[in-house]
Image 1 (cartoon, helix red, strand yellow):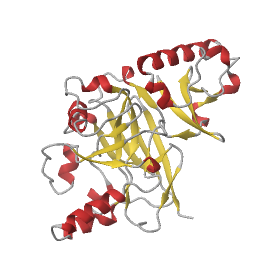
Image 2: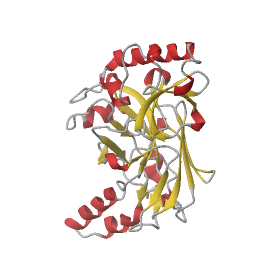
Image 3: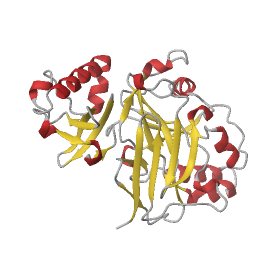
Image 4: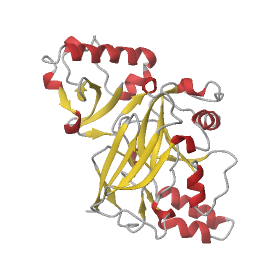
Length: 314
């Protein structure tokens, strides 16, 4: 199944893709198909675990059988206004330096001994089709990072690699948009505080409002045979910038989950971006950065395409 959050005048409302690429709004669907349960959000569906997903499958099946009755709650996928698939996660976590060829393009950066990551804010989330605002404080080095993401479906803390995938409910796409203005600070800062402050500013440059576009949907894991063998491509104004498969991941999903769950408690709806593949703008010669008016697309096999434009700050 494909779950999503629809951007409406009332706010984000949960939806599911049905039939011939149509979207059923669960907030406005008729009672006849809702089986006595009307979830308020995608996170609420995930918090119910397998029962929630099974209920949603029954709702989707009923809607497909009663399309005429559901007409007022159904829109074409292409005409849907998207919010982030999960608008209210407890935790958004990003893994960095996790594609082999990306390390090579960044000056042959050594392979890390363990996953390296950071937390992103909920305010940085943005739906597909929405504009990324170029911030006035750092407008000149805005970079793209198309990333494969996994979503938790169960509370997860201190789990083994062997059990880790049992906690994954599905997959989505993100663009870890990055203001690279701080890179010189990281390289030039004098110890002990220079590199620390440089890295802090680097993370801040990934947490500006709207700097984590994601979606347009979350696909349940039963639809993806092997998450470590998916085609991922990022395009800037139609030109291919990143083109890889997820088999280039250094740390696979079970390693990431087991490692970080030793410290963090993940909850249903939380998601992790697994790192940027090769082809980022900062790694090119000359560098390529995004600017107002550009369109950036991130396409992930089996999931879909995340599309955003860039707009000037008003």
